[in-house]
Amino acid sequence: MKSIVVLVLMLLTATCVFGRAAYRVDGNNVIIELDGPTVKSKLLVVEIWSSHTVRIRTTMNDQLSELPLPYGERNLAPVKFKAAYAQANIEITTADMQINVAEDGIVRILNAMGSRLLVESNRTFEPSVIEDKAWLINQKFYLNMNEQVYGFGQEDRQNRYNLRDQAFDVKQDRTAVATPVMISEKGFALIWNNFSETRFEDVPSGMTLTSQIADDIDYFVINGPSWSEIIAEIRAITGQPPLFPRWAFGFHLNPLAYNTGDELQTAIQQYRALGIPVEKQYADHRLYLEEKKLTDTRVKGRMQNIHAFTQLKPEYEKALLETQRAVIPTHTNIPGIQKYGTFSVAGEVSQCWESLKCQVYAGIQSSITGQAYWSTTLGGFQANQACSANPLNELMVRWTQFAAFTPVFQGAPTGFEIWKAGNVESPEFQAIKKAITLRYQLLPYIYSSAWKAVNQNDNLLRSMHFDYQKEVKLHNNIGQYLFG
Image (cartoon, helix red, strand yellow):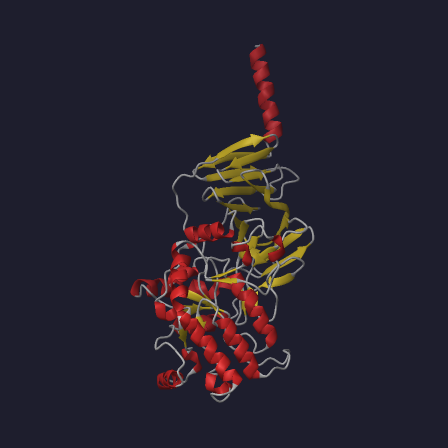
């Protein structure tokens, strides 16, 4: 009888301590039911994708959304991990990460040594004013006071390098790219799995992500700890980029700058007559034109920022089957698009010095998403009254010199040709010719570096973090990157 009483008391104690966070393990998932006046949500699922990658999904609904993930395929092979109670918390451990879920559902993600990677500070669900029976979600994370984070896309004339103390809309339009990936100098990445209208805001204590339409709060955390390991993991989940054909790394013209194929061929002949190397081949812009039309529809809703990608995904898959070495420009840059033979283009950025400066940031940012290839909009797309006045010829010289050291060297979309910069004896003409010629002198090195980028999960264009992660003084050097 005494033993029975003791057993009953033990069970009652366990129910009291752990009753707000009952969990069960289902394959590689830990499913946690939250209950009580202080909980931040009702249901939380920790999906173990690998020892380096965890997906956190949580909702105020009775069950999680069944919407398919627009990118990535989960390997259903078992992953070794442990789940257990630790006082009032639930602790889940893999070989490389620790995930701690408190009684109220707040999640703390640590590395294997117990050092903090990403820690939630709060989350809220409010009824969405855009879609019935949906939520407006608000997720807050602590960041260290001096921790620098990078990502979430690019925008014309806006510095999107170190995101601390910044606030902006993560949006997709002709001049901006909405990329759901953020990387911390501490060696982890966050992938925010929401594509509705989203706001990023940062203060000294941390950052907040607010999305207008959602069923769940849904995000991935990837522990490198090196940035190269993060890129390898993103590609393992979402797909490997193919190696472009050699011509794609040379200087090739943008067919959209010409009214007819004959005009394009005439331009190629003129370049060669002047002794300037240029490729006879060029990228296939058909899907890019379709993407622009779909982006212009300004769709509001759950897939606002990747509407064009979701509509064109069958066409990308078809192109991948038909052409093993496709070269397709895209203004979309989400994880997974790299496997279709795409290269990211900056879009219709302004024709000014401010835009050129921000193109450097944009190129560096592109290297943290898994995409292997990026191309600047050489010379800008159109004049902008908000820009500083500039002599176009000098701007074209500097932009061409920069473009020669980017993964894909595509000509101007406006039809600006080298001979428009001045006569063959002018300094501008000679400078542009020298930049293009230098690109071809480096082409064997660039092509072999591209092979390494796709076969060893490297990048042609890299933030200084990739090679000098421990050199803190280099982390905010916004005008410097590694190429090759």
